[in-house]
Length: 203
Image (cartoon, rainbow, N blue to C red):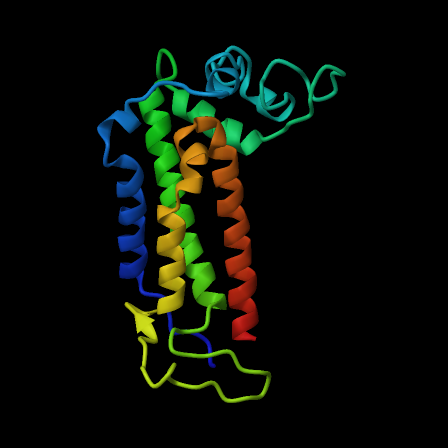
């Protein structure tokens, strides 16, 4: 088949709001405290607390106590994630879990929109079977035509993005602020995939 139609911004906005709602409908989720490794990466981290200069974001490991060159450092280095933590704390007397939870959910929603774009680049429209190279694709499955596009996106891409947004496997990465590293990794990876895929599609 030819390349999918141009994405509809409306569909992306709707998915963004849907992903936000899934992880924000319970006010207690946003008001929850620190969990799992959050104390080590945020509340007990001198880099995030502003106890050392900003440049230390690039010199210390993810936990903020050891220089990367220190033998005691475990060499976990995530400066962009640490930068977002410090920006979360900036201007406040102490880290507020609420603001961290809000940012975590916004980032998750952005990843879901990126999944929508990425899936739309590589998913065949619903109603098309699997064909060998050079073979014409059927326009129906068992005689029943299925929707090709939904709000400008291949329907299969939208279904994939909705499943991704609602899948419970993301709970730890989204609800635990230390998991922001994984969310940011997914966002940057998908952005690169979209740029590569869109460039290849355009030739």
